[in-house]
Length: 444
Image: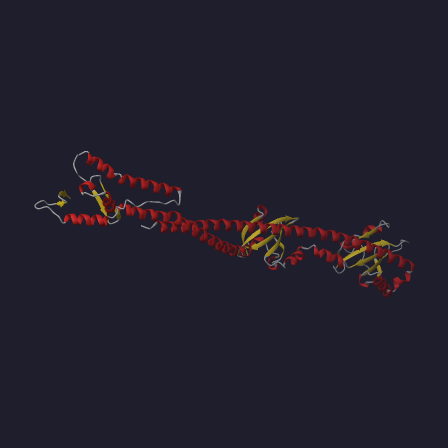
């Protein structure tokens, strides 16, 4: 059987360990939930920035296209005016090329009234007509309406399939059509900014997560910071299109590793952010270890404090009372139990003292009983654990003790024992247990 101090210490350690495990479990769950929330917020922030960038780029692209269209048309008007005033340049290829350089255009084509190219900076295009290809057919309505001034969207040209933007109008005298072609370098640069591949190239500076753009209908990865995944179906990297549709944040096996995924619909695509679980939870172990150390330190301090005060006010109090009771049990009824460390111990001390006093009252009761017998009978008691000697009312009279001598003998059991030993030295003849005392006989 263990003592109370050991039992309390073991209980405190066991309870502290259970509480630490419970608290750590709750903290880890909270951290994981917070990491999920943070990953979702980061994804939404990035998605918003991508959408804003797309909108800004689209507005910029529209402005550049409008500016290009106006420039193309303006250049065509200026060239038509110069050629009309100096028709001889039509026969001089070098002069036309100089005009093209001066006007900052890449191609000049002159059409006759039938819609055939008969002059320009590119002789290889001569004899092409508005019926030569789909791109050129855009301008065919001008043969019916000379007031038209057309600017074509950026499109591959008929002859070489290179990206060009053409504008055309009739000369003021209605003798020929001037078509100007410009390579839309700035427009292409602006359009490139609107491509997902360009946007994701900006996100590759953040290596902790990969971003994906998935076609809503086919599930094809149309853009990603993970270039090796572009062109694949999402099933090939571990995703399912229906799972993307149904959830915003979820776990999945991506490219063989556990990851947390967030997707959002953006136009004709789903834009997603995928971060590996290892990267997502990288802060959890260090934070958990730090909290564990703090909890253990707090637990040790509290456990020590509680155990110390428990020992001081409970265990030590019980030990003190037990020692007093041990002395009383051996016969030392003069022992006083006096423990006031708490209300309970104070009450216990009071009850023990009352019980002891009731034992001390035994002599008075015995004296009363013996007095009723009208016989000189007395009872005395002493032991080595109590200095005083207790005796009944008739003992001093039987032993012929004066008040001073009685007080002396009752206060020291050794003196009383010596007195009895002297008495035993005067035994009466033929009477066992009877002794002579100053002419009187006393039986012990």
